[in-house]
Image 1 (cartoon, rainbow, N blue to C red):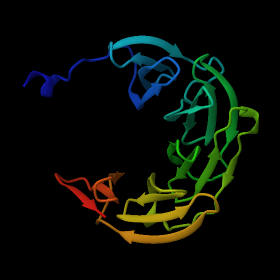
Image 2 (cartoon, rainbow, N blue to C red):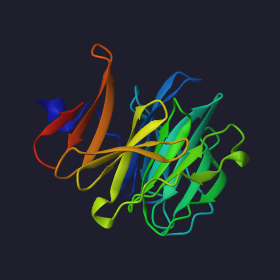
Image 3 (cartoon, rainbow, N blue to C red):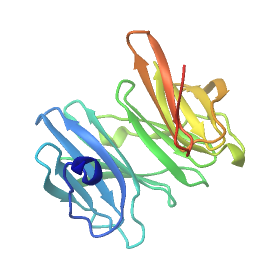
Length: 232
């Protein structure tokens, strides 16, 4: 039908390729936002319900060609924090989302490209994953000057196990998933390796959910074909 083919609404405004999007609920204003990060360095904020453009967020100090291509958003003690990353230069920017201002720039100490940054609200941490399996952990704080990236010393993996991203498992345990279908579980408080499982021949993306009726956590895997696989 029409909606399946064309979507409910098309949001037009970016002048270049969109490289990252997030849906974000602002608890202070009770508004659902779509935040989209464009190749042209502009971050656009949209009202999800109204389908309307709200504002641009632009870093006036950014140099051409050094655009950020990864982002995540956190809400901490009534403050909305936007975190973006330049994957190749390994720079992490911490923004005041409401003011649209960069508060701090951090260097991620790695020789490899950042492939994923994810905020986990229940443990109030951002997990940074690079393409050789190194991971960094950053605790989100209201005082931005105290935010630091600490290397969790997660188990290293070879190039054939290059990690693509991470997901929440339970408590302080996260899972990272690799191109070769490997899922590894770690304790984010100390980087301790817990378990490793092969779930597919290859991964494109991976997500997890807690099933309340069975009291079990499942992992949903997309391997690049026409099927989704679900694991306990």
